Image (cartoon, rainbow, N blue to C red; front, side, top):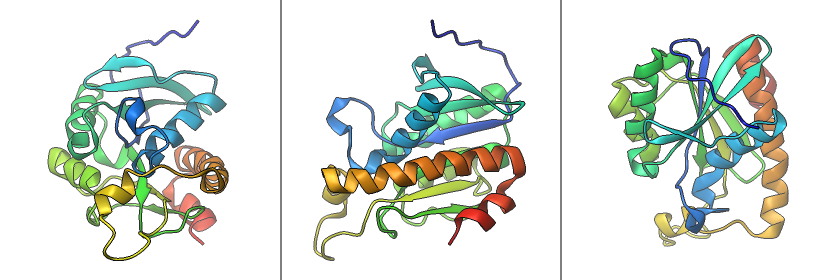
Length: 198
């Protein structure tokens, strides 16, 4: 049976996947971050099912490092509200909040790791920067493919669902992303960037 221990101030990393809650948004491009966090939970035989501070959370141990998996329930554009509340509660600084999210700049099957930076036009990241008052958190971007053409509405694109062929490519990069997250936690972000930013 899944048990979640609410132990304050003991997590090395918050591992945050961005997305939109409810079945309506399952398999949509904007939920790549949720999918990655779920993939981590599956590998470690846990659940991201405890509601806390406007998010669903679950606990994993990566090596000797206890980490909290986080899926905000505030919807994408208000992601920062949940992230800031949890970070404050557990006293986790920005540099130990790893945020996983979708990126339309990259093809499906591509991921990129960054130490910090601007929001890049992503509303979820913009919200987190605003609520943390910091750009200093690491990110793992998962490519979801470019819009079919510049006139295609961006909101419609990110809320569209992956087809079956795309899901095969996405599944492979999600496996790589799980390994990259483990590398960040165990060996640091420099090692992860050297290995996975190709």
